[in-house]
Length: 151
Image (cartoon, rainbow, N blue to C red; front, side, top):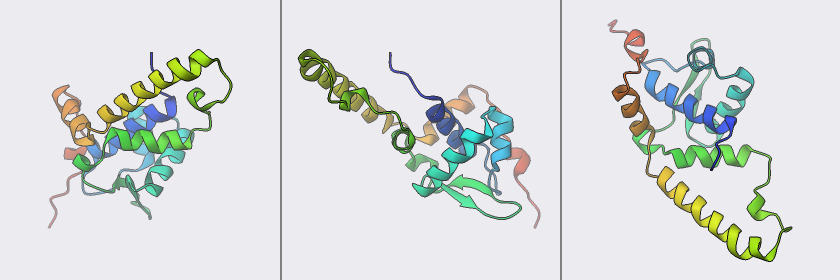
């Protein structure tokens, strides 16, 4: 079975949290940590990389935080996966030179095809899709609490 790393799970949850709970103000990392239970040491590292790769935008200052760099319908899970995978230091066993002829000519190509199919599917799932799933699942958003109608 394909496994997802903690760092990747935290990245997806953080981006979804920002999309789902953002109001007029950016979402602070402390809010994400509180809501999602993501350890701060993982979170900041992942958020900064997502900013560098243009998935998120960082907002400085006392009321700063993070917001999506683009519309949530324009950010895919595949994009988030690629950013996090580039951060991870473990080598992909498919790329290692050691191994048997069966491994190199049968198992690794098959695994590569499966990975490509999986990434193609992830490229079709947007952050907007995840937000709609959360709404259908009855997950409450803090957006309504953050909207300020002051004129």
